[in-house]
Amino acid sequence: MMGSSLETVEFLARSEHRVEVLDALADGPHTRAELRELTGASSSTISRTLREFENRYWVRREGHSFEATSMGAFVIEGLVTLLQRLETEETLREVMPWFPSADVDFAVVRCLGDAEVVQPTESDPMAPVRRAGQQLRAGTRLRFLTTQVTVRYFEVVRERVTSDGMEVEGVVTPRVYDTLVNDSAMAAVYRDLRAADGVSLLVAEEVPLILQIIDTRVGIGLVDEAANPRGLICSDADRVRRWAVDTFETCRDGAEPVSEP
Image (cartoon, rainbow, N blue to C red):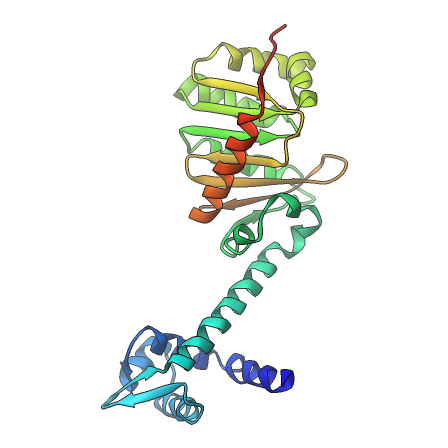
């Protein structure tokens, strides 16, 4: 049974045109000419593909048009879902060792196929942090969770707050807060942020992951056990944004205001 199913998958996946034709017909009726235009396939390829699909009862002919049967639509929906999942796996493969799987539900992972993944390189080991800063410069509102702190990132936050009035809400761990207050390089940045309007900083014992929401764009920060940046996953997907906002608000609601020295 499994072997037969795998043969069917192979039959479809062996030709990109087969997938394109069945997917198009699942959306509605098309003529041969329309299918040629949609797929770029030759007349003979379209005719052969339609004949193969008719033999499998995946499509039916209505005059000069063809459309998917309910079974054909069922088959292509499953295949497209599989292909999308494989694209997502390929997108995330290299950063999976640092991906916070326990804190990101599967419905969100499914939406990351089109995400931008920024990884450090030998010549630019801070590329994820630099990309996060670039996104900051294009936004008007920042919400973030973090278990790590870098001067470079918070300097950009300060610049956006003091120069452009960016609204900021952040939740940090006690260790991060201690660094903000006591590290000589960070303390000056933090003082400026603390004095600015529209900035709210809270402390929570448990911050599940590194997360930034800049307007509607989400960034998931990845670090290794030594706190080195290993990647930044950026997404505009609505499902990812809703998850990010829910995650941030849950953490924020359980946090406490900072105790100023």
